Image 1: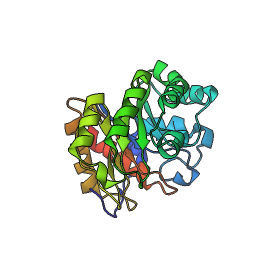
Image 2: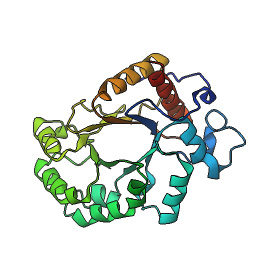
Image 3: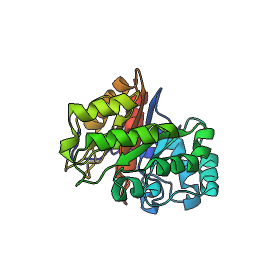
Length: 258
C-alpha cells in the first residue's frame, strides 16, 4: 500500500477530529512547527498544537516514551487538550525492547503502566507498541515469558517485529494466547503479514514518499473492514514534512465518506 504521491486537499476541510466507529487514526507525534501552514494554521502557537491536532485526528502514537516517561503534569496537559473520544498510544521504552530485549521486564512494564494510569483513568488509553530492533531474531519462548510477566499490568500491547524470522505460526500462536496484536508495519524495508491475533488491530504506515488518494482510500477500506468487530489503530509516519499528517487526515475523510 505505498508510493510517492501525497494528498493535495487542505486539512481544514476535515475539522471535527474523529474517524467513525472503532477506527483511531493519527501520526507518531504532533510537535512539529514545520507542519505549518499545511497542517497547523500559521498563527497556531506550539503549546496549542495538540489541541488543534485533536480537532483533525482522533489518536496519536507517542514516541517520547521510547526514551523517557512523561511527567504527571505533562499527561494532565495532554488530557486537557483532547476530547473524550481521543486515544493515546505509546511506544514502549527502549530499556524493555532494546536494552533488556524482553528479558526479566515484568517490573519495567508494571512501572510503565503506573506512569500511564492518568491516561487510562481519563478513558483515553490506546495501545502500547513494543518495537523490537531489526537484529532481534525470533525467540518465541522469550516472547511468551515476557507476555506472562507483563500480563498483570493490564495493558493492550502490540509488537512490531523488524526481523522476518518472527513471521511464523509459532509467533502468532504466542501472541494469540496472550491477546497481543501483531503490528502490521509497512515500510520500504519490510512488510508485515496482516495476521489477526488480538481483539484490536494496529497498523503503522511508514512509506517515506506518502500515499496517493487511491492508496489512502484502499487503506480506509481495510481499516473500516477490520473495525467491524474490533478497535483499529493506524499511525502514519512522523517527520519534519507534514506528509504523514495530511495522509492521516485524508484517510479520516475517506472513512467518514461511507
